[in-house]
Length: 298
Ligand code: ATP
Ligand code: ZN
Image 1 (cartoon, rainbow, N blue to C red):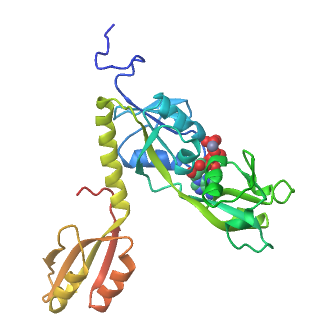
Image 2: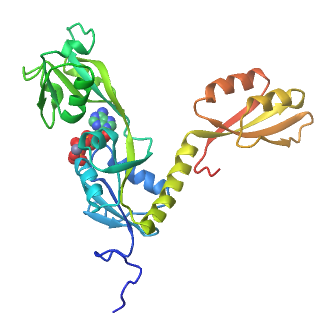
Image 3: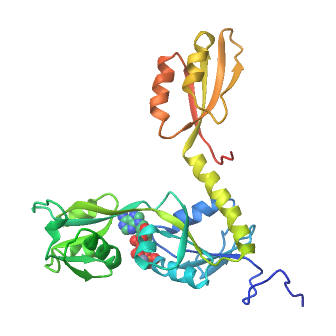
């Protein structure tokens, strides 16, 4: 029987990086999708406790999101994908390495719709239901408010309706759950999204694998924030059109078969997109095509 000499782990995992992701729930699909976009294939075994990537030195553990910071602190997993809300609440010794751009939500205070909210002092002496006692306690302390924190693990939004609390502190994305429960959002305590966390004592060999993953994630994120644009420009206005386009270096300009026209190619960021498109049209650009970019390496 051969012995895997590349393994420096007592568990004999062959030096693979161990990633913890949510087993099921709001972060699961996007976590798998991100790995896929990074060219990491774990297609078989998502229903098991763990799965090996077939084309990358990565082992994926499927866990409850609440447990991920602890597993990473303990080194059972080397890295994890988890909401910032959970990272701050659990307060474990882990390092946030990268924001992942999905799982966006906010942790907010909400009160009964009919009540008038002024500022944080509204909460003085009140009872607040939450699954985030640590973050809420810090918020109350920072705002010098004394309130009673009532910790519950789920369905926080029904607490005011059944007389369990005067207010809640809970995750919100669209606000429709609050609305349906007769509540209104009054204060955002934390804006959150999924992040990549790592064990603070990651071994250098594993750090090298992590660096590869970070490089891929950043390429995917950049690509998502940018669009590739192709357009036809009349040569007499080419200078103005080029000046509107930032590009990675500068736009590519190719002559069209039709005399007096050029084809211009460039990259535009999502934020600038609509503004620039309007200006391009006004400058005489025609046949504007906008296409998604899969990966972007600068
Ligand atoms: P688990 O079984 O893993 O403990 P859960 O019920 O705690 O799952 P989910 O509801 O799946 O968790 O949410 C996971 C994470 O998704 C949250 O911690 C948060 O970071 C993010 N999230 C994004 N939008 C929302 C939202 N509208 N409500 C709740 N969480 C959201
Ligand atoms: Zn959870």
